[in-house]
Image (cartoon, rainbow, N blue to C red; front, side, top):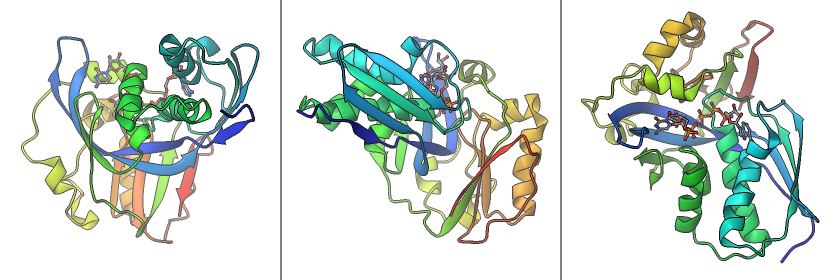
Length: 274
Ligand SMILES: C[C@](O)(CO)[C@H](O)COP(=O)(O)OP(=O)(O)OC[C@H]1O[C@@H](n2ccc(N)nc2=O)[C@H](O)[C@@H]1O
Ligand SMILES: Nc1ncnc2c1ncn2[C@@H]1O[C@H](COP(=O)(O)OP(=O)(O)OP(=O)(O)O)[C@@H](O)[C@H]1O
């Protein structure tokens, strides 16, 4: 067991294609999507302490620190492992919040994994995924953290061969915080006419108009500037551009090392992943 500080770097995700297929009796929706990990990270430091403590830096996180997914991850494991020694948690927040990038979910999932390693709990990947699903629909993906085709609420994960290393990525977050619950309520679930799992294997140059995100229609209609950002990416030479998750981050894939020099509005956060 380690009592020294452990530091991990929870990364974010993008959704490539996203379809809401069915409204379930538990209020959630079944969906299908492709999750792809992206190297834009928070930093999470954990140290054994006398009592559970949480501090944050970087982007400020709305809500009480007791609701932070890192704290909730600790409490979730503590229910089943009552002898778990408390920890002092420091989260440096860098991934934009309410962006469809799953940053909070990543923090929660990384916290579960860190505690499993730190305290040698011996939890398998499947057990960690089951705990992660209790924290949030996007959390299980971050346990696997490899390109995956996902179904159910996002917890049924099937690794797929998908390598975007030939592309550079532009992420533009215009600061619009989209409420995920609201976004789901705007949709009428429907099974797509094509198989996302098959179509994602097409060359990226053929994805435009084929790999689609159901949330774009209602979210773009509420926030038209998002559609403009996506169009601007295509004008600037994107091979593919789309909104991630329920928004509002827009992602563009460009040929490697040819990211455009666009002067976006100064209030936007722009991330270049080369
Ligand atoms: C849009 C995605 O980011 C796509 O990856 C996810 O489906 C959202 O996952 P998330 O942010 O982890 O969402 P959760 O924190 O689990 O749920 C937030 C709210 O979104 C709605 N929700 C979420 C996931 C899902 N499969 N069906 C839903 O209806 C529910 O109203 C829920 O109360
Ligand atoms: N560690 C955390 N980081 C960010 N938000 C957190 C965290 N813990 C809890 N939250 C809560 O989760 C909400 C949104 O989290 P997140 O950053 O995952 O949004 P998102 O990028 O829209 O994710 P998604 O793709 O899952 O919709 C925030 O409003 C915040 O109150």
